[in-house]
Image: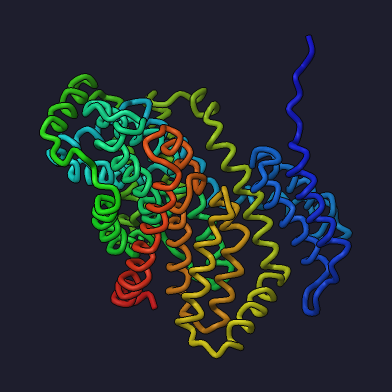
Length: 489
């Protein structure tokens, strides 16, 4: 029997290889940068190029990156054992395991049907008008966001099928002349909710802990789960209220009233049956996780009773395994979770050593001096950095690759301009999710919803751009004021 091989894609691989070779061997090492740092940059750029070009799946690219860091000894010349330890150091990062374990925990939402039940319950309450259905979808996803680190699973795997069933119940098919009834509008709301909810919690999308790690390495500022959630609450609430209205104005649905939607939702809930024991256990686990992640025990009893967010995630998974809600085989088969642990470890390791070897600070100083030479205040300089950072997402098909490639340098550049560290950290951190709205390839949720056929490419991109402007205005101005009230800067 002949085995069909699926090797690396040659063109993206050759582009990545060429970039790495050019930077390593042909570009002179700048003054103020060590050769080791420059060589690690060559490996880093090649890795990001391979991820963007999809030369191999991101996990496979990350394994190769770990191998090259260990083999070339760029972090520890002349010491192969130490270089290997450096290459594997990302696996000891607790934030990586927080996301990996949380993805495993979130399997229970789909398995038990609790996620769908929450969505239909919201629609049964608010679904008498099309706008109400839109808000029900948005707030259903918000409820699920703290415990679903895969924004793709949340927006594409749980909420999107509910949105499709609602559209279908009103005869709105994914085809011209039919989708305009209600499907196009709900699909656009379905997707543009996802970037907002992803910004709301550290555990709402996989790259957020990477941002927390980069902020800590760049400024020494430690963002807790509770601090992040409180900072996001007010601007996120305003964005969630405005976004369905903005899309309603851009592409108003032909069907404005949906008196049958609550009845349809109740029928779907009835088909799910009464709340099962597995759902009750899952609900209890999620309540416990929110209780621990928010730091409530430490607030009541003191710091001695604080529980690490990662420890809490392990406890939640343990309960689900002990009670049989999840089976170990199901956890083992969760490729997304294990894949996240691998690629996250590699990218965090490389980004971390770029900082330790001084390359990020050099790049930040270079960018900062360039903006400073224009004679701009730190406010204008910071705004330019944020806008360039966000709208460069048109060139990225991976939010993770974008953040890994640009966040640390832009954060350090903003610091060099004199921007308050916490204001800059929160603005760039939340923008890292909000930028997902721009394209039909901006994050994993996008191809699922766009691919269902309810909108054209033009409708998608126009909506994404308009929503991005509204969101950035809300989070930059209202968010900045809210963080000032909180005393964060």
